[in-house]
Image (cartoon, rainbow, N blue to C red; front, side):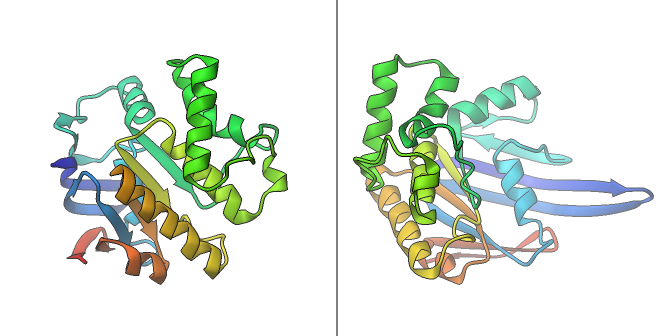
Length: 228
């Protein structure tokens, strides 16, 4: 069952009189529960692709379909609501809020949604912190954590609203090799246990080796699509 389909996407940027084709006819189907890495050299289009998948940017042409819903005609307000409800992000810089505790950082997406009471939000945050191995650390602040622990908090925050897709942009870039491997293994375990769909943008060979599928992008086109 597909969770996401891209149909003949293009993305064109104009710089003065010149034209930069960041994406050039990209079509891709992502099934529910996949653990997929998008790879390619700098300037290949993978960041643009991830931004369009995440509804942070719109294609110049082509269609983005999530769970059967074509987002092509959606307004910015509707795209924002869809992104809030269905998509979560993990960034290389963690993006934790330093004045909030670990639990408060994880609760933040639920606070924004305003769909749960205070006790329910805390219970879901604690559940996710336990899932990433940080039980008992809910009252600490980001400055008291290691880089690997901060990334685990970011993963818990991404998962707390039970998204359809988690987009991870170079999630191991700021981690040492041992911590990076532990972090990817954690996401693989969550993928296997919870069926959460992960799509990575990465240069990390280790992430590519652990992915269930590797899509290589070059000059705005998919040049290979390999399932492991």
